[in-house]
Image (cartoon, rainbow, N blue to C red; front, side):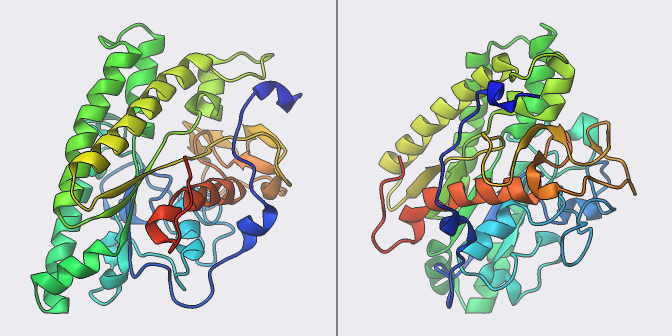
Length: 350
């Protein structure tokens, strides 16, 4: 198959950037992560939900085996933590200890979205962004006690980076299926506006809880993920489902404007729009941009199945999620986009 026809794009980075981790103290004292299955590292295991992957072949390349990460190895949040210089991964909120919480927590939940209803009818008891924010507010109470008061907690929280990855499921699970079947009351412009209105309230809530350095992720080319290609593409067509990509691009453009508006309106706020890449042109060892590495059913890997042996050549692990190799690309792009939040001499990433 000629993958050059996919007509995808991402920002090429030097290979040394992909492989270089920060040595010594972390660039920031703490990292808090909000999001969906791209960052979930075990929170859903403890919930009554079908969106959990604590079985092989998930985690086949992770040191601890299956942990609830929706990939074969590290996810985007893990790699960003490494690039920021943390000597261990940021733990899931579900089992973070009091001492660990000072260095951050991962609130991510597979299936979650900006809208409270996203993912619930399909997956059950997932953790929406609003609930993740409530969990963070509970964590702040713990941090305040550990540090001996609100003043110290405020200073500590103001130095942390907050990484937010939301919107994928609002499109893949909620909007696009109805859009393709002409059963949605929203145009792409109206749905993007609906999401941005809710997202604005949620990001303001995060700011009001003490966050000042906030990285907000764009959405990747969702029309290029295997699930969309299998459902809405054609067998003899290597191109992406551009109607889906176009709808997501409207959201991304609105998100850029929201980030700029929040920076203008909120004192001391430093919001950054981070570029992501759930798909790419051939890069390094990655050559297969369309197929899944594992045998899939209903979107996820078949439990106990044997995945492809050349996982470093595949962009996609299952029908929605990247391999660790794909995550390495996305995480490095995001890390470089975050430079104003950690660099002493910030660079222009726009």
